[in-house]
Image (tube, helix red, strand yellow):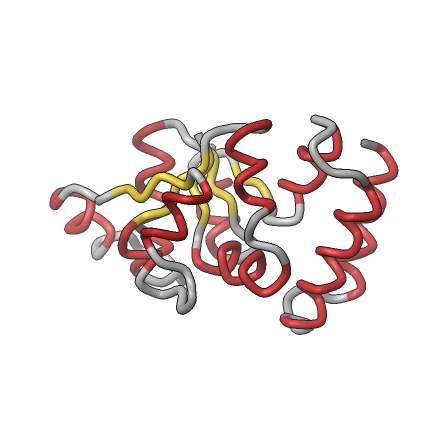
Length: 160
């Protein structure tokens, strides 16, 4: 199971949200926390249902525990980490601090762009479409999806 954080949903919302439906069909089930979804303008529970993204409600003990995690990540990112840690899920994030937190605790992580590499490998999309989506993401979010990030993505695509 893959659990997406807010930045991943925002990047795909800006570029091609529909591609996430293929992730759920061809790669692995995709989920988002209800708390995380509240951060993402323009993506509703109804949109998630149409895309096959499961909206997860965090239990009270996890909500309480997220407030106790000593980290440089937001409350919602702590919650993503805890859910992935507890359920042995993969955290899908581009956030460096969340990625480091997950790695310190042996929680699997995946970059948002990495989902498109998985889709290319699965034959769900071609390299040209993946490249176009990545370029749209960069145009909408150049601070975090910079040329270095794109270069790594393109190298991964070539190896796919």
